[in-house]
Length: 342
Image (tube, rainbow, N blue to C red; front, side, top):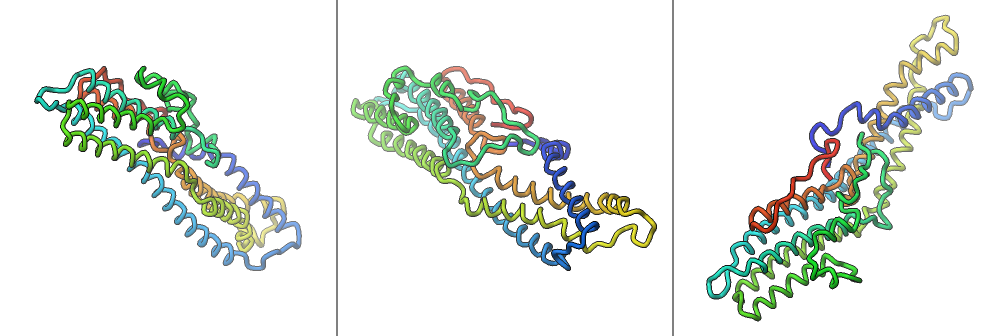
C-alpha cells in the first residue's frame, strides 16, 4: 500500500519513460507518413478517435471502480480480522474458570500464540502466487518489487517461526494449514469445556469468535482464488492500446504551424511534431496510467506495492495482542519501504 508522498511526478515519468518514448516515436512516424505520402486512411479522423477515447474512458472508469471494490473488500476483510483479533485478545486475557479464578497462564498464552500463528499462516497462504493471477509488473508507479520475501510472508520461515511446537507435526501434509489452526483452537476450547474449566456459555461465545475468523478467511480465499474477470481486464487493456495506436491520426486534421512559409519539408515535420506530439503523448500516457491503476488492484494479496499490506497488519495485530494480554514481547511495528507498506 503506497503511503502519502509515495507517488511523485518524477517517479511516474521515470517509470513510464519507455512508453512515452514509444508514443512520441509513433506520433512522429504517423506524421512523416502523412506528409511524405498520399496515404489518407481517414479523411476526418478526429471525430471517430474522439468517440473512441470517450468509450475507452467510460470502460476504464468501470474497470477502475470494479477493481477498487475488489481491493476494498480485501482490506475490509483484514479490518474485520484486526477487530476480531483484539476482541479475542480481550476475551482470552480476562477469561475466568468456573470457580471464578483466571485460566491457566500457559493455556492463555497457547490460545494467543496459536492465533498469532494463524495470522501469519493465513498471510503466507494468501501471498503464494496463483496459477491464474496476473503477471507481476517490474515497475508500478515508480516503485520496484522488494526482495525481502520472508518479511512479506513469501517463504515458509514467515510462519514456521511463529508456530507452537506441538502444532507443527499436526500441520504436516495439510492443504489448508490456516483452517487447521482454527480447528486446533476449537478442539482446545472443547477440551476446556469438557474438563469444566469454562462454562458452556463461554464455550459458545468463544466458538462464535472463531466463526468470525473462519468467515474472514473464507472472504480472503474467495478473492484470492477468484481471478478478476479477464474479459473486463483484457478488453480494457486492448481498448486502451487501440486508442493509443489511433490517436496520432487525429492530428492529421491540424494545420501546420508553419503553413504558408518557405520552411523545408523536414523542418516542417519537426516543428509540427514538437508542437503536437507532447499533447498527444500526454493523452496516451494518461490512458496508459489509468489502465495500470486498475491492473494494480486486480489481485490485492500478491505482495505488490499497491496491494493490501497484510504483512504490516499481521505485525500490528500481534503487537496489540501481546500488549493486551501480556503474552510475550511485542515486536517493532512494520516499517515502510520506499513510502510503501507491504
